Image (cartoon, rainbow, N blue to C red; front, side):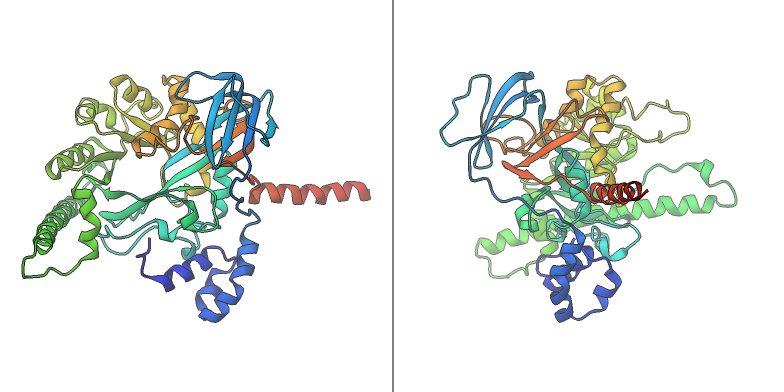
Amino acid sequence: MLPAQDAFKSLFMNIACISNFPHIVRMLGLGVALAGSVHQQAVASDNVPAAAQKQAIVFKGATLHPVTGPAIPNAVMLVERGRIVALGTDVAVPPNTRIVDVSGKHIYPGMIAANTVIGLAEVQSVRATLDYAEAGAINPNARALVAVNPDSELIATARANGVLAALSVPASPAGLITGTSALIQLDGWTWEDMSIQAELGLHITVPAMRFNPELYPAPFDSRLEEMRKLSVQRIKMLEEAFDAALAYREARAQNLAGKPEATKVDVRWEAMLPVLSGQRRVFFHAQDVNQIRFALNFAQRYQLKAIIVGGADAAELADNLKQQNVPVIITGIHKLPLRRGADYDVYYSLAAKLAKAGVSFCIARAGTDDDAPNERNLPYEAAVAAAFGLDPQEALKAITIYPAQILGVADKLGSLDAGKFANFFITDGDPLETMTNVEQVYIQGRKVDISTKQSRLTDKYRQKYLQKSQAE
């Protein structure tokens, strides 16, 4: 995450992220970097962003899966100016409309990755391509959007499997308030083009509150006490940051009321004003029951619009979550239990338990830099939840309309409904099945290239062995 005003850092990071030789880019001067930037972009990716939709398009013959209603077989969907205009079995087609016959296929709304560093991380072992964390613990002014690299190969990989929007999240192992996330669509020339909501929510990493004495037997038990003290210190830092932001809000209000003593603008506390007024959500990254309980109490204390990210133990506090109307973003189904004595399927069945308890939820992935290349596997997380008690339709909603509702963009994304963005993909089957192929992708009505680095390498080396066989 980069402050908006840090233009030079933004320039060099964007160039470094798309370069095959990031260490060279960092050493070069500005003039050389600018001269080579066009070439570096061409090397990084062959995926050219699609032009805006100019002609109305009708898709006919496919089974539409609106998600918010039952499937519509042999249907028609009219798309114009980047939005869905109408869908059903009886749709009036205006003149000069391009007809796309997709008979026998299935059309689904684009999936939403609700917890990821996609666009902020590329190669885990190359530091120059990682730009998801700021130094220090309190960084509410850090904005994820301005650090998004539109030329990332990982964007194309996720998009090719139907993941068409992502919440790009600032993340820092040492951070407390890590910054503001951005909701992006996975196609565009620049981060401005990709932006759906530039500043969606503030992210807080709740300090660890689960300390296992078995991991620190004597004589190492002193380490456990140090961890407890550090956790207490970090909680105090978090409370002090919010108290300082409240005091800043009061001081600024007096300035606006014409009081003589001026308060200098502090970009950190200024970024927290929409949070304190309830205009912006707060994402609490919390896994165990103590962390979740702390997050709920903290949100009540400061009157915050809270969302739990992680929620491994969320089922244990389902009543509290429902009562306070706090949704949960489950960060991965394919994980081992937190505790040695827990059931093996505690994560697999978590979504079903929350659904049964009436808690709003959606399914995402871990959101780490080593997980970013695997965002394409999002539908298979939902598939496992369906295999362990979650209704299959609910599983599909958990990666489409439910994240859209939780993120506050259900008027734009998450389902096939008139008036929403025409963000959808066409398949030959159920997207929760690994054997299903995504054949076409559309983002705001424009057909997007679904080739990836992997598919291009496949085509390249298929030619190699074809040439060998022909020579023999």
